[in-house]
Length: 269
Image: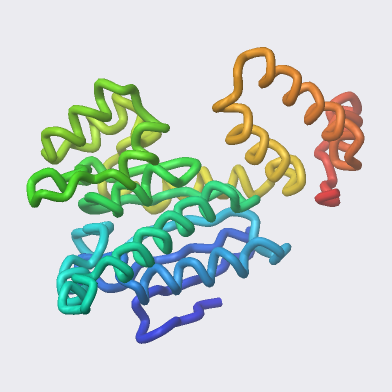
């Protein structure tokens, strides 16, 4: 399946393993997260939630830039409005924040496949995904400080992935970091050779696609909910999640299959 949306700035495909790939396809515009691009991604992600055929989502991009973040020309154009662009800026930031939270709240695992430069909200997009793999030539930055616009919303996602010192170094310096450093500080899972990235990411997605969808949904939701709780609150919450998970048919099937030394037959229930 290859569905083309809105002048092909976003391409989607779904393979037989239930792996849906979203490809940002506006390389001439550095795959900027324009109004149109964000709307398209939001629509695809919203529709994926209840689509049982979709088991894993990969976000990739065409061209040398994964995403340069917000479309600065689009933002600047709206300064001509009577309010100097305030309402438009508020709407854009709200739209972007909703999109990033949609990735986190989507019951399907979402993987970033980064083959180029990811900056500002583009780096935020990578940090918002559950997993991220990049080519060794990829680079990352939160460079807003260089143009008088601190990367405050990218900061939210980045600071939830890496330590305070590494976050502040990126945010205050605005400098590009290598894929190797991004891996070292935990912004991405792994940096691989450029020609191996697509297959490497697909193999990870393939392994995940073979797991119980209901189990992945329960686990992903629990992970993000417990992370901001106190230790005791997290254990209480996770214990209740485990109980509910144990009562699912797939848990019964999975445990039975393990004991019987056979492959489980998931019902996603």
